Structures are given as C-alpha cells and as structure tokens.
Length: 322
Image (cartoon, rainbow, N blue to C red; front, side):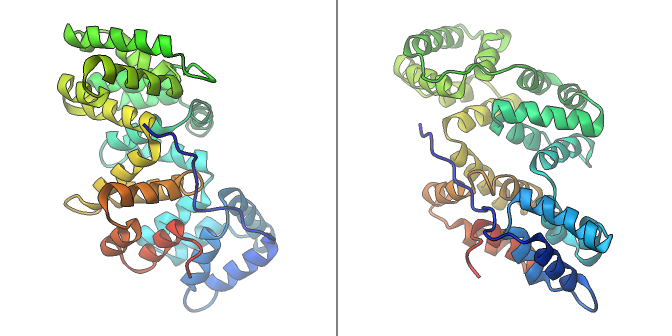
C-alpha cells in the first residue's frame, strides 16, 4: 500500500496582477470572435483562489459577471470546464453532489467518488457549504435520493467522524483484522455494523495497517474479501472506499480509465476529476495512470476529446506545455 505525497499540477501564478489579467480576459471576449487561447492560459495558469480574485476584479472594473460572459462566449464541455475552474472548489464539490441527485439520473458513482476521497476536515467544510447554499443537510439530502444498502453506506459516511492517529496502532490493527476475518467466515458482514463503522471511523493510517494485518491472517487481500462477500452498488462503494484509503491517486487513475474506456467518454467524470484534483494530486494521478495502464493520460484524453475542450484538459494536466 502506498501513501504518496500529493502533488497538483496547478499552482498559484507568480507576480499575480489581477488588473492585468482581467484586462486580457475582457479583450479576449470583446468584439468579433473569442480568443479561447487566452481564456485557457489564464484559467489554467492561476490557482482557484486567484481565480476568485479575478472574478471580483472583473466585476469591479467592468461591472460584469465573468461567469456570465464566459457562458455567452463559449459552449459545450469547454464551457463546463471553464465554469468549473471559476467555481470555489468546495462549492464545486457541493454542486456535483447536488446534481448527482437532482440531475437527469442519480449518479451514485459521483457521490461515492467524492465522499470516499474527501479528508475528514474537507468533508466537514463541504457539509457546511452545502447547508449554506442549499439550506439542507448533506447526508439527509443524499439519502433522500438513494435507497437500499447504498443509502445506509452514504448516511454513515456523511455522519461519522474519523478518528485521528499520528501513528498506526499495530495491536489494534491485528485485533480489527481478526474480528473482520471472523465476521467474514461467519458470513455476518452484511448484518453487522462493525465493517462500516471500521471503514468510516478509523483513521486512514490505521486502516492501512488493518488491511495489511488482514492479508496476513486471511491469506488474501481485503479487497478480495469484499469482492467475495458483496455484490452490486454496495460492493462498488466498499471497494472504492478501500482503494481510496490504500492509494488515492491510483484510485482516481482507475476512475479516469473507466471514464475514458466505456462505450462513450464519460465527460462529466473526466471534468470532475481533472478540475477537483488539479491542485491536490493530479500529477500523482497522471503518473499512476501510466504505471497502471502503460498509457500516457494525455494521449488517452487527446484520443477521446477535441477542440478547445481537449486543449484545456491537456493544459490542466500539463500547464507548462505551450
């Protein structure tokens, strides 16, 4: 199991001058035609916090809302990426969760992907932002659009607080691993709260130790045990949680591979991961994609996309490339 030091691809611009930036943006969108290259370079060349300053400065100087001008000038998935980049990250995550329930169809994979990958502190903040924006409790809202085992899983995931351990407790890991093995052998996982409580309340550091201990006593990986015990959506959710705990960049690499290799490109997932992870661990995800599939992620995206949409996605992966 790997615990990598996370690395994003997007960093704050040095010598940031918001007034100069908004002047370039306004020129790019004024008159006949739009200079998409300038828009792409600016949005991928600044951090999310700098983009919020740019939005405010744009409104102050021109009396216009940048998002509205972007929507008027652009379209399609290219517009979707630009608007996502202009949205504060927590609000973007909140919107993704909201429309995963209120969209054309319930997107359980989106909900699972976002929730299993959030750190405890980030989840608390996302819950606060969701309450402020939609005047609803996040857990209650998500549960209202879900049913069955996945509803219970999401309810627990949004209501429990993870413990914090500066170091893994090996004795506790061995005890938990043995208890998990006993539950597995007695076929009682599905009726016990222990499994979900363990996965949602133990620290991720502690869970990595528990999974390693489980493999020693069980003679098989924890993921293999889940695959043998569960089916359907709950199996997918538990595997996603375990994979995210074991190695989050590898988990996202797998999500991207699935998005790029289905019957058709899952652009919603592709945009969500590249935008939300661009300042977190997208460089690590990029490397894991190549290690896992022996394919360059840039080449995979290039083959599945086109136009300015392709260009801005590739710039998110490699903003230093012209």
